[in-house]
Amino acid sequence: MRAVLDPNVLISALLSPVGAPAQLLIAWRGGSFELIVSPALVAELRRALNYPKLRKRIPTADAEAFLMWLQGAAILAIDPDEGPPVHAPDPGDDYLIALARSEEAMLVTGDRHLLGLAEQLPIFAARDFLEQLDKG
Image 1 (spheres, one colour):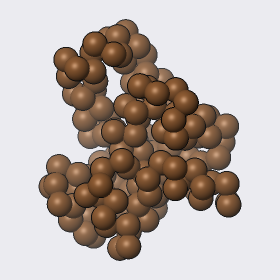
Image 2 (spheres, rainbow, N blue to C red):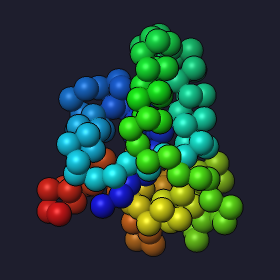
Image 3 (cartoon, rainbow, N blue to C red):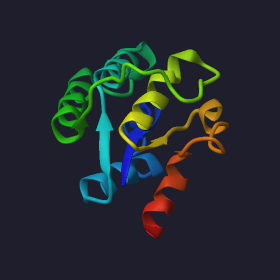
Image 4 (cartoon, one colour):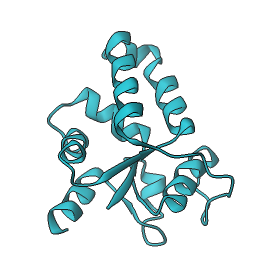
């Protein structure tokens, strides 16, 4: 099984080491699924980790170490040239849908607008994806 984790899921994992997003990272490192990232996803994550409200909670050195670890351990895919099969309510999220589609991966997100597309695409909340891993 392959998955793209929305930057909001990755940030949640950093903020709460006991929540479902953190459990996903543990499951990934344990070999339960392959994690797909791309340059656009890493860039969005880097931007978000530099927001002042997050810098107060996640030190810059920890954020950089996390980014380096993620890029070195996850599968680094090329950002797809093709658009998504279905557009997100927020056009800024289209790249996540396109990436998941091109890599034949599930998209895991905490974004309610993206979760609203779950009937059309394999999109899961973190806890629901953990349940899929348990079944799998």
